[in-house]
Length: 134
Image 1 (tube, one colour):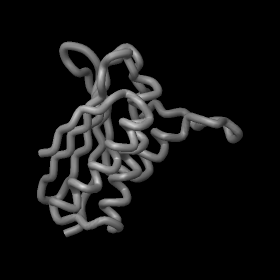
Image 2 (spheres, rainbow, N blue to C red):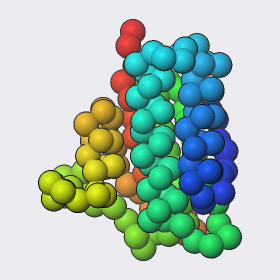
Image 3 (cartoon, helix red, strand yellow):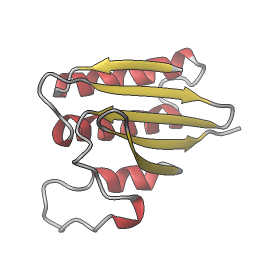
């Protein structure tokens, strides 16, 4: 398992993405492979959401990666539990010309599963899972 806290800033979100693919490479999922590229996309979207919508001044967000034989679990936690994204079934299609609102659609498109859970004592965790090739 890999767990790291990051500052709730755009720089922290970029670092989370970089360290996630670095960790996958260390686990034997090389840079540039589909699992690595998909993980980079998922971590980038979830970390950006944590920084944009879940930021509490002075509080970090956390990235956790767990590698199972057939699955990679990505968890991004932030301190703002009252600002929950919609559940997967509740996503609404963004307006065609909207500048924002597509991140969770990307998550839903590339993750095998995703969900939102409360994080105790405060905050929330967005979990995305990737099915890995055999």
